[in-house]
Every structure is written in C-alpha cells, then in structure tokens.
Image: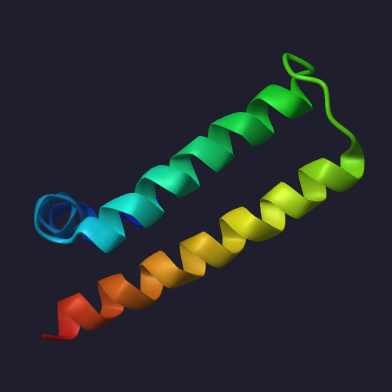
Length: 72
C-alpha cells in the first residue's frame, strides 16, 4: 500500500501512534477479509462488503495523513 510513501510510512510508524493504530487496523482488516474470502473463516458476503468499506475508509485516512506529512 502506497509504495511511493514507503520511507514516510516507516517514519510515521515510529513517530505517530494514531497513524500506527490506523495502519495496523487496516492490515488486520485486510487479513480478515482474505480469510473470509478464502473460507478460512466463516462470514457472509454482507459482512465481507462491510469490512471492505471499513478498510477503504482507513486507507483514505492513512492517505490523508501521508499527504499532509509529505507536504510539511
């Protein structure tokens, strides 16, 4: 995710607890969605779609933080 910000992501993960929490939550949702789609965990299509929307929202928040930090 966001390869163009790789260095900035590494820095923010050590300096910004809020960014780290969002980043970790995004990764956890990503893994959960993969498990549900692979039928490793049981879930409904509605649940998967809801999780995907949550993940996208987190990604948008992360991108906004990255853009702001990059401009500073």
